Image (cartoon, rainbow, N blue to C red; front, side, top):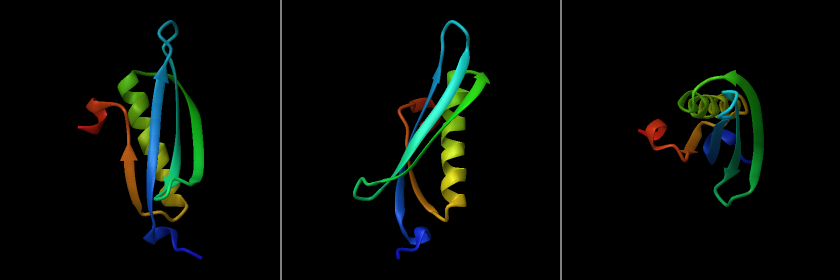
Length: 84
């Protein structure tokens, strides 16, 4: 069995905010170095900005992976502002 702490994982995240209501939701998936699925997650946030939704998606994904024993995480996001 592979020790999760020694394995690199890729965390793909996204956040979305409805223009009419301002309600936001987030989600993401984690994949190993060959692209095999490890886990997925999603969460309703309520009202927040697109920036906040993107940050929450990354934070939730990192916390879930750390809880599962993964310590080497590459974050993949489509939001340049958050990445900087």
